[in-house]
Image (cartoon, rainbow, N blue to C red; front, side, top):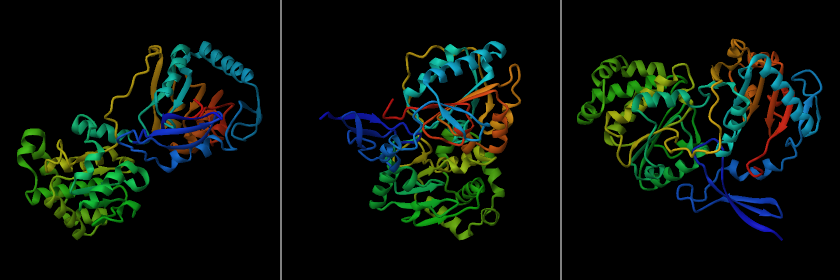
Length: 426
């Protein structure tokens, strides 16, 4: 019996990059568990990681190339050979490239999986001669840019340092469900007597051990942050030495937040005044604290400025750049490994479509217009804004290829579907 353990890493789009150990018996994976050799994840994996096997061996997997035999979106497909699928794709894409140019093809790829292997696709498209693609993000792009504008980079302490903090504020983040590694060190901090405060538009699962919970009206987090800043300044809590040495624009900021009085902020956010004051009490008592912020608070039209307002709070009390405190958002501070075998980027990559406006911007592309789309590692008909408009824009294309594990709403609109490899297969 051939039984072995293969070391791997989870490629899901999250903070973890959890180390995995996959037990393989006679060429088939039979068990997945976390690898304790990773000092950060220490063998912990989430329910998604634990359920890879049910995904890989699901009866609903797409296993063969298929072509549409009905109206687009009707969901009628028949199995075809790989030769027919690849020949059809070659004929269509090559013809459009010759007639309109390579930028007439939209290459849409998002974050179903991450990792070096994902970059292999660039080799094909660079040799194809170019394409049209999107910029920005639906997840955390506004916040990433806002924090870079505020601090110069998205940086924070290692998450294990959280266990040493005396006060932890969770703002729009629910690590009990979405970040088990942060939750692990949060639990350690609470066991040592740390105080936990949660701020979320809903009562979430992470607030069970909190000493204070605030539920602002959706979209008003920026107002709350500026109101907290005003109260801290009013009480003379900010660290003047730190502000003078490391910050720029504090006098103007101090003047601006004066209009965010306690009564005004309470009225806008619908949080009782005494709760806001209690939060300020805790920050005054523990000026060096952890503020961990989630991604949902930046998914509004004022999302970037909201994150800037929230991220500035730790700076007011010099709770930045030292142990046991800091502002945590995402985890993109580690350098990404380079894949050395990808051809240089083509000069014909047209990065011209804001991803949040994919449906409306597709038809605005000219010289050349979009004629086809290749979609992989994404399901935009489900996840993008204004899916009805997007569906209309896709329907106007001459040709659509979707590479997928399962029959998604987007795959249902394809002319050719290619079955994708899962993490265990590639």
